[in-house]
Image (cartoon, rainbow, N blue to C red; front, side, top):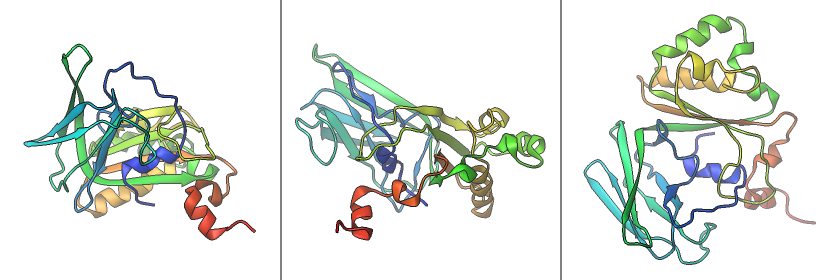
Length: 238
């Protein structure tokens, strides 16, 4: 399933405390991949409410005002900016600035962000099985060093019955493909199916940046991976 990064908000829950200091939502990190054009990537995070918030990427600057009340499923004090379509793969730094209560301008930065195709790999134990546990694992893991434009992220087992904002358990932060980021501990990171599929897509598309998000939970049914509104359309209450 191909998704924009913000769809990860349905994976797990975190109680938000910012103390007035702006920050990115916790799955926006250095080395990540955002969805390339013609799609428009969303970048969002937290801070004080009713503050002018600016985002700089390349030669473009965007501005918004952080929310003063809950809206669109986001908490009070959140800011969100939808970028124009980005065709150049980068890498980019993304800077977000917001004034603090004392008037000081606070700037936070994401480094080494690529624009490509982002894929969500979810499912049961067959998706969770890691590279270390497959046939020819040693060679395959060593081979990962050749693919620095593939970036990987592993989310933990934190199911929620309602839509939520952040991940409470990130097992593996956004990482550049390497023998260590691909060949982690058994049944921890990184998903063998997800990696091998992503590498195939990367090669077939001429080396386009690929972001791979692995999130799996053994024995789960497909219905548990569906947003609530989609689930109710398929299975309306009797």
